Amino acid sequence: MSDTSVPAMAGTEYHRDNPLLRSKAGLIGMCVLGVLVGVCLLSIPYTFGEVRPDTPRYDHQRLAAFMLPPWWVTHDEAEKGRLEEAARQIATERIRSGYLEEHELEALPDGVELPEPTAEQVSAARPRYWLGTDSLGRPLLTRCLAGGGISIGIGLSAAAISVFIGTLYGAIAGYLGGKPDAVMMRIVDILYGLPYILLVVLLAVAG
Image 1 (tube, rainbow, N blue to C red):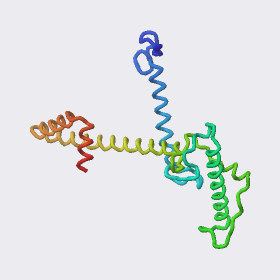
Image 2: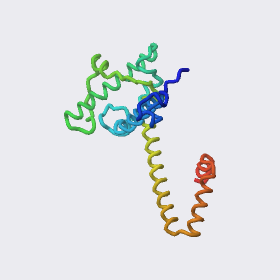
Image 3: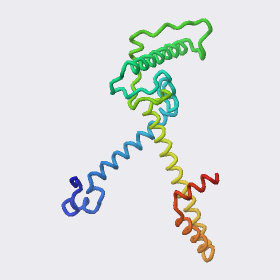
Image 4: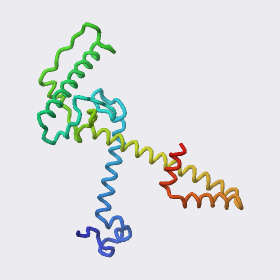
């Protein structure tokens, strides 16, 4: 395997002083992580909200489209049939939504029969699942983005809470000084000595 990093003395002075910039793999990895974080955070209004009526949410189920492969993979006849049925359902929902918006209604009145979707409407409504669907017809890409957004939110919240508690705890210890400071710092040393995973498991069991 070839080494893609730049020798320390071969680059400019700025690159010599910054080890990260000497590693192409490190820069590529940082860019990929940045893109993933940005996409997960920016997609939260779409995966959890209602930006558009036909925007797939993380919990959106369409049983007719269960276990479909990505759109760029060749489909067999059964998968084509399920995809066609899903497209017909989406086209029917769009016709119904258009009728309700046009007449400013919240529900379809009794006795009103909507027209069947045309072939053009079904073709336009055919969904494209970039990563396929699961056993309940939920788009996997949307669920991955939603899971990433939740994980990032939990991580940022945990970091913020940890910084707040640690800063407050250290400030109190420094203000009191003497024996209280020593006791509080020994408590911190004990917590640092405990395996993190074991502590999490114990807290989960206690909860």
